[in-house]
Length: 297
Image (cartoon, rainbow, N blue to C red):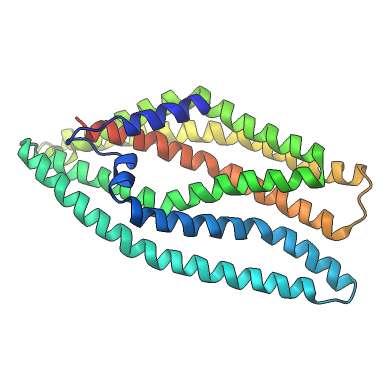
């Protein structure tokens, strides 16, 4: 996954001509606006990592007939609520303005190049995916990576063996997408190639051609889904192994601190949730790599 990620970043950043557009270019152009939302996401992610730890403390305090842990948990919850709400209000307005400006410029450039309406329509839709990724998926990507790193850091202080198991699962995900990344990219290229011809195809009166177009479109969609299913199956084998190993390891070490055991289990579940979400974002980055290359033509 490391090599594929480097390749993705390089391809997203290499289109510096006036005709190209990429995630990196959009970020550089609107750096100040996007940086604000990234900072808010970072704070929100750090607060989210602390929840299982605070829950464990609250349980221990309640067992000792104390409420301090519960108060701290409430404060953490309200802080996360305020930061998260502010970030979402800001995001919607910021990315709406960015899309309006970038999409208008893209249509103007495509018309200058005398592209067909079919191509302009398709590429405008593809451009939407770039902006929507920054607005909706990029905060989740940051949350996932911060969550994985933060969770591993906390887990290693609780149980080293569980830390090794969690890290092994991350290596498994990396290996899977190192193997399948290029194939995923080619399938996305084939799908987008067919999509660009959709308007032109629909203008024809030949229903056979139209039927063939949608058949081809769904053919590539099915192949993408099949590849995702294979990756899902392999990764979940690792997830099941981690789920079975964690309680065995905790009990085997003779841990009797109920709050600590509960926190460890929550962190493992949280880690699994983050790891399972990671492939979705990897697939999106691969797709956006192909879109960026296509828009730079």
